Length: 206
Image (tube, rainbow, N blue to C red; front, side, top):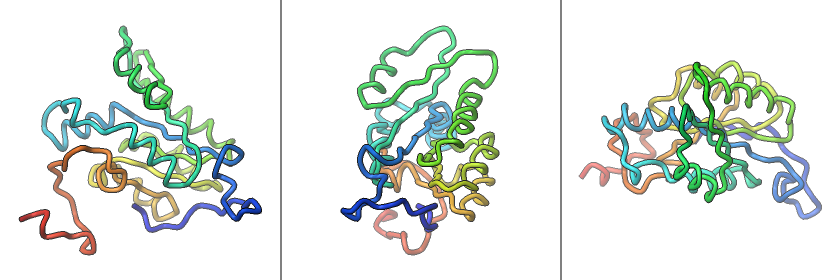
């Protein structure tokens, strides 16, 4: 998790709680680039197509988005559905509280839809944003949001995020690791990553 401070201090109620807590404050919008997360997990970490039990527990991901900034979260799960809607997966997402966004078209429809959504969020200054993706195609939109008065974060696997994200983190954007911060997996993943010394546990290697 980033050590950077929060992007802004929200007004407090008489109880001393942030106005983002409850139903009358801001919302955290969790935008999930499902294909990017799945491809990174399968190609870069597992070296094969993930089994269902090896994929992130998306209910935990949405729960984390609600808890980390102590306000309601709305999960938008973007997926390409050219020709056929994956109803089993869509129904599972609905049951977990996500709003599935199935898309079709000849181009990178998920990227286009997420870019448009990030652009639309510029005018919703009370709302915060978490983007689950490693894709550098979203850097222009994230840059605009980070320069505003809101909290912004990306989520994924630290060692595979786009290098451009590092510059935004220096300007206040946060990062949440799906495995180590969100605890989204049932088992330890076979990752090779740089370990901060204060997080090193020799028992993990014995």
